[in-house]
Image (cartoon, rainbow, N blue to C red; front, side):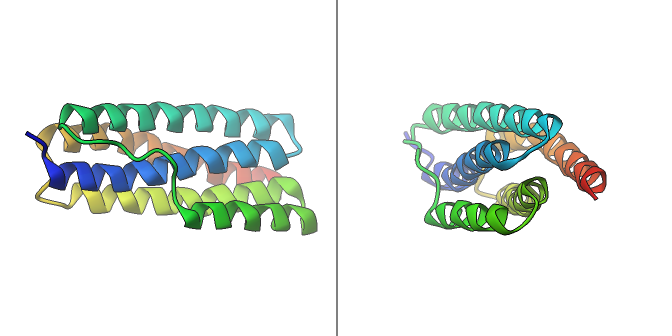
Length: 147
């Protein structure tokens, strides 16, 4: 039997994780400093791993996972390309991922507030919340370093 409410909530989170992965990949492309490129590439790999774990949870619950992210994220990446063209690429990359991370943290908080989410799904998302907070702090440090 499929737990549709939990799979719907997790698919919403999954879309944003996919968007985050793509955003970090794009940030790694446009960043100029090797340190920033490496950081963004590692974060993309981390988001891919999170997305895989969420997909696995969706499948354990009997659901089917979405795989392509959102239209909004595609628009955000186009904006990032334009921003990189008119400002320092490191700053454009940092600003874009900072916006994306805030959106992702809110998605996690919203999902975790849902009573319909299974205990195993809540545990999975809570396990990643600390990493998201740490990434936010690291992005703040990158922002300070690029100033």
